[in-house]
Length: 91
Image: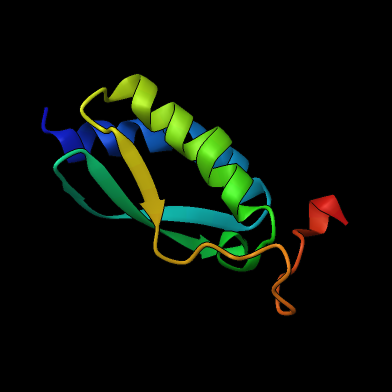
């Protein structure tokens, strides 16, 4: 099984939690240990997205796919972004 398929399988294990808050994640590419993702839906404008990426997504992927040494999202929302919105379940 290639690395992207293994990454997708690892992401599938946490997708229900992301989807519960109206979000998801999409794999963009993998190169030399760096996995680049796009946060989708509510994850794309949530001030908790940095924590979600590091504590949830990155941990799950690195555990399942040791070839992944770092995870980066192209659209992390800053906690002080005036357009950031908490998911409905966190309000």
